[in-house]
Image: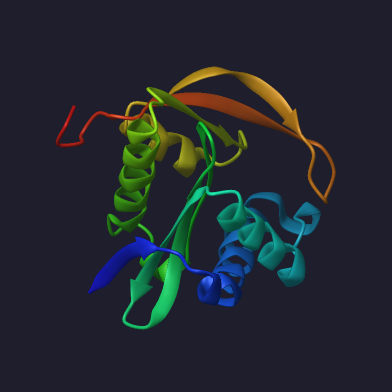
Length: 163
């Protein structure tokens, strides 16, 4: 059974492992040889900084193994990753709804989420929960600047019990 819980500092190495693996599984399929592989040490630093800054960082556990993560910053969904065998099982939706609830409890009515245009399954996923496009932006990344679509999503999304 999958458990969603708040991350702790002790989880950071496992979170980084899932982040690196899930990111590679997604973006190597979309971009092939142009995909950038995230450095594990950089990933660990990202998640340590998120916890230090008081962001919402959730993990999905299958038993004692972390298989996914979700991260919300001040008013945005910063990351949502699941290992491939755990995708399309409702876990991502549960993670996202928990992140949106946390933002709503902080007074955020609408969150932002960036998605690369080639990630059509992510776009469909967010749209199914009420997200709609609001623009584009260039985001810096270690592999070079990337254009991303910006979506707004209500923090009480379509399909949630409170909608």
